[in-house]
Image (cartoon, rainbow, N blue to C red; front, side, top):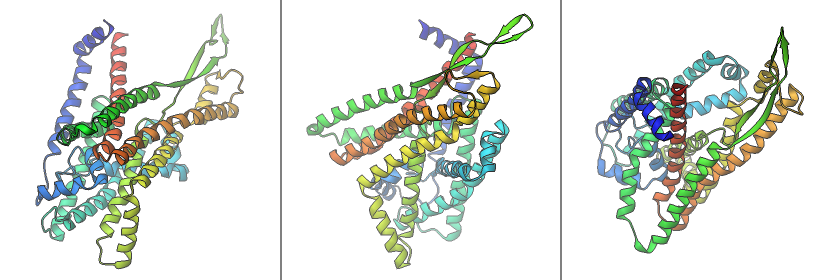
Amino acid sequence: MNFLNKLNLIIKDSNLRRRIAYLLGFLVLFRILAVIPIPGVDAQKLTEFFSNNQFLGLMNIFSGGGLSSLSIIMLGVGPYITASIIMQLMTMMSERLKQLYHEEGEAGKKKFSQYSRLLTIPLGFLQGYAFLNLLKSQGAIGTLSNFDILVNVMVIVAGSMLLVWIGELISEFAIGNGVSIIIFAGIVAGLPTTINQMIFTFDISQLPVYIGFLSVAVLIVLGVVVVTEAERPIPINYSKRVRGNKVYGGVSTYLPLRVNQAGVIPIIFALSILLFPQMIFTYLARLNNEVIAQISDFVLGILANGWFYAVAYFILVFLFTYFYTAVTFDPEAISTNLQRGGAFVPGVRPGEQTSFYIGKVLTRITFVGALFLGFIAVLPLVMQAITGIASFAIGGTALLIVVSVVLDLVKKIEAQVSIREY
């Protein structure tokens, strides 16, 4: 009955209906853009090239199939994610950027986002140029002059910036995080093709493997839900204050610390870091310089090793979980705000001791969240190496992101419904 009441509120609430309609409209626009190709594409060669390249296959999923069809949004939000990673790293080295992100409120974060968007443009040109030259060398696109390549790069960079803008419109006018929703839509758009491929390559002798993978997928979904919802509450007491004849404060509450504070962001960061060197060295390997070509072939040989990729993926996810948590959650700021509000953690002195205590608790629970994220991220890759079924390598990462984004979307819809109820 509770579910039916909430559904009824969603249907009756005009603001919520409008937000959902905006979301669906933006997703339809995204899918339309994903099928508009740039000129001179050999579809058959392009399909063969992407089927033999796991790294670009993963990136193709995040562009919603736009990369495999060489659409005008073939880069997806990849350049923006890379720019965001660089800007987040810069906050660790620049005190000014750190103050801008943490201490200057909403205006500071808007300026920080603007810097990320500006950095997206040169990164987009670099990635677009490398992609087109790589595909040209593979015969996937026809002979293009330097002017044609420049025009195409400008088009796909503009397409990537358009996609970033659509993501920001989703965040502002619809529901959920716009960039995450776009990645989610890209993954869902690629699922029919993946399922169709698994059906046509179905081998009855591999039935136990499929059943095992399905069981692991269910466990991953349950694990993601449990870890995403898990919290470590820190008790908070407010001291009593007497003003006139009234007593204020004296209440007890708690500070919820998420086990997985970073959400799905570490997975996206790790994939971007792994894909970028692959793309650059693949391009460099085809240069006329023999030394650079040999170095590039050596690095590509290392990157092509499945076990090296799995270990690097796990380590990056683990480190980025800690990194993103450290950037977005500041124990010192929390401690200062508690002290200003007359609140304290029982048994812990206000100020520096409270900051240290919150940081210690956060480090411990983040370790659990980072291990979990890293484990379920590389588990499909291990299964693919053991079974030889290539679709498993993509399925786990896609499943992790889909479940996390859906959970976030459902929670935000429930928050909107709760506001209407009150």
